Length: 60
Image (cartoon, rainbow, N blue to C red; front, side, top):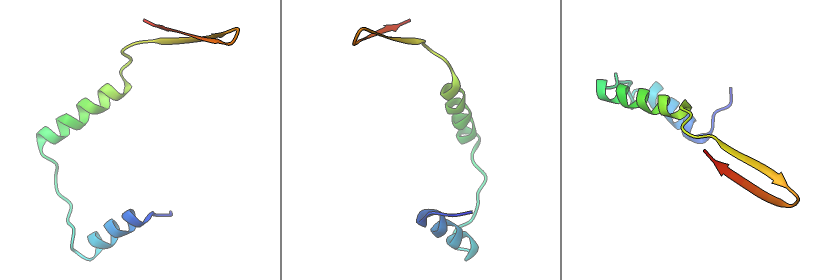
């Protein structure tokens, strides 16, 4: 697997003991869950039709 420079720095820091893993707080987990749910939630549909050189958008 190829890593970019930032990923390499994180791996090096972890392996050398400069960085340690921690357990996320309950509120952080809830926040992440909420963000994940809203990411895949379909709020509105948008329809685009291209007719004779014009773009017609309809939100609904």
